[in-house]
Length: 83
Image (cartoon, rainbow, N blue to C red; front, side, top):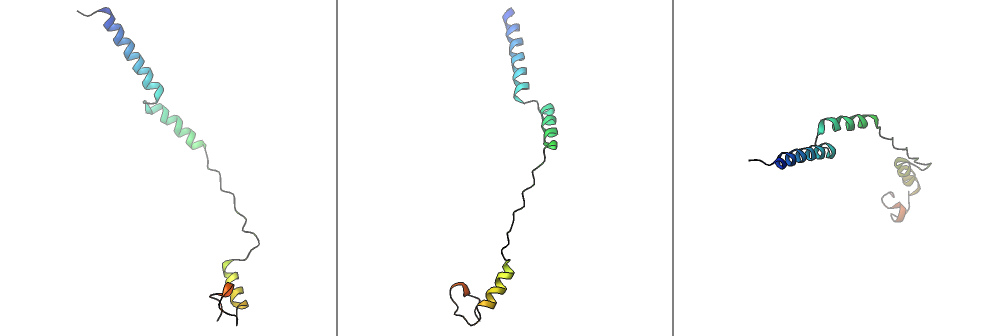
């Protein structure tokens, strides 16, 4: 024979379990829809363009070094550029 408390304990346990499942996100259908809509709304911020300044490019530097290092010893800044 069952006691009346057994049915009450079962009902309370089932209610608490259902509440826990809903509040912790185990039910994925509704919460995924909410997160997906938020993800669509957010846009990535574009990266700011970096100012390269007024300096010379690599090609310009190579040409200048070849021009300036002619006839100089192959050392220091002229290393690899002197002929």
